[in-house]
Image (tube, rainbow, N blue to C red; front, side, top):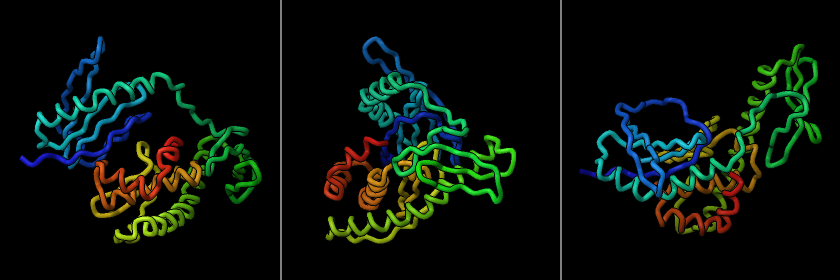
Length: 258
């Protein structure tokens, strides 16, 4: 039987929503680590890769193709056991995630800097970056849902301007540092994602999270370079990291912001 392709694993703050190809079969495995029993939920679905995730509640989940052999799943879990333990310990040390209230004075990030949220009454509804503040103008009353939608739309609009520009800059740098590789401008999609900063399809399409514009430009460029390297190496194998290190030698420092 043809082995299933392996993909990245990720520590995530919350479970992603259900998507196309929802799991058809759900079972679990219990892994032993020292005096710990770690249960891993296993979901099979119409997908091509194996992926493992640890969530902020320390639960672990592995997703696999429907026809992936159990032996390969068990081998994969055995190899990733130490990573699962580290990810669970990481979340155990983290403070609870901050819940945004979208009220005056609250801090919101943009390109790595913090800005105060300020709401004012007026028409038309606009969002502007003024000095050290993100100013939301809305008709009375400026309730939280209205402000939240306005701010999210503003981030989405800024992402539509900034991310394509950074992609062009990164692609030029990619070509300069790896001239032997043929490069092309990939199709770009920008949308808000709950569990990823970016992704690359086997068709050469790149998707970037609109909330990337909250991060410093250096971090944005790292995510883009990461996805560009996937155009040559779809999996996170030695060839992928060798290419990423050549294109962006300081990628580890940049990734730390995420």
